[in-house]
Image 1 (tube, helix red, strand yellow):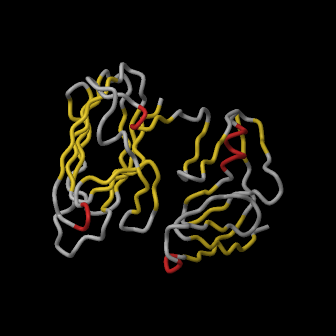
Image 2: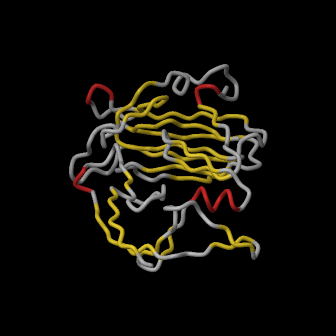
Image 3: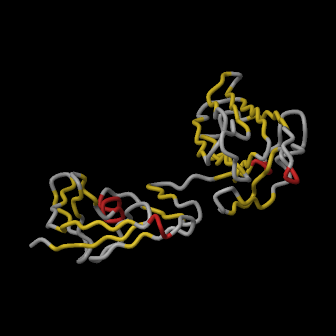
Length: 230
């Protein structure tokens, strides 16, 4: 039997069960709300030829050729655990990585980095608030450009690095951007953000790297919650 579902979403789907699915964003305006209609039909799930049945009300559905399924049911049927981190809006299947803030990592040749050792709360141009974050250049509403270079010893202990780059203030029309970030692993360039005009997620693979170097310049560039993961 097919059932008509009305799905209300700001910018995505997260299957929680039941016949109405609501995904709320605290950072997007209500004007971005979108309604879609889908039909919920019976979907059979098999793992290694053995049929698995989800709890009542947690069946998947098909929308525009894509099948959406209950993540926790699928993950646990495969023998893995699933963890939801609401703060970072991340889903972890299996082991949850350990994150280490840049302020807690000693740079090469010093006990602390004069820039990354002193984080603060930063509000980006989109109105989002980030803790453990930094602003490079453009202080007090000015346009002064600041640059910063720092290198860390990794010794293969870090799987990756992640952060967000974003303007702290809204850019004027025709702006060339407010800064950039380059990342080197063992002196090889592995990431170049280019000129930042909007919020950008940075997620680079550092598996096996011995040293990691950051070259940053900015005039009001927000470096939001930067961290290594093990």
